[in-house]
Amino acid sequence: MSVTDQLGGPAARGPLPGTGGPGGGPREMAARYALLPLRLFLGLTFLYAGIDKFTDATPFSSAMDRDTMEAMLEFARDDAAAAWLADLALDNPDLFGNGVALAEMAVGAGVLFGLLTRLAAAGGALLSLSFWLTVSWSTDPYYFGADLPFAAGFITLVLAGSGPLAFDSLLAARRSRQDQRLFG
Image (cartoon, rainbow, N blue to C red):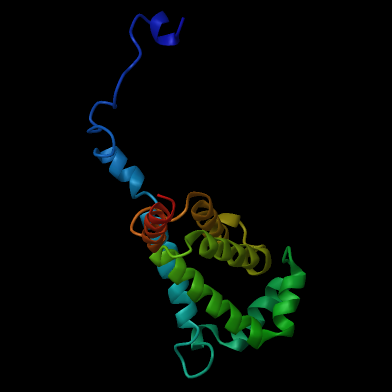
């Protein structure tokens, strides 16, 4: 005997009231586009962060020049969970700084446009986790640091994919049409 039978009623059938049926109601629409704000926020933020590092005549703007980056890493190094990562960045500051800026732009563009979203989001999660393990590790309380929430957002996109309004969807549809033509 089911729980609904025990409570004296039949099991619910069909769509939930107010949802408008399969694929058409406000709940379905909200669920379909739920990842879009996350993609927009993470994509724009990381794209801007990468571009901002190259907007001055030097490789980094005055807000984040090489000296500032080195001072920040040296300050955070002793309390970092991955001090070896801070040391690696301090040993190769130009390579590290330019590499991070280019990676941020690639991650930002991929997530923003929904192109290779899972790969871009994995890169973003890796960047965010490395920032957290070096610079943000000693932030107390931990929720004052932005790197861990960024990592959680990127991991969500790794697991869920791009959602609608993404080049990934267009490419998948194109591959599907090609497969139908080839395999019939």
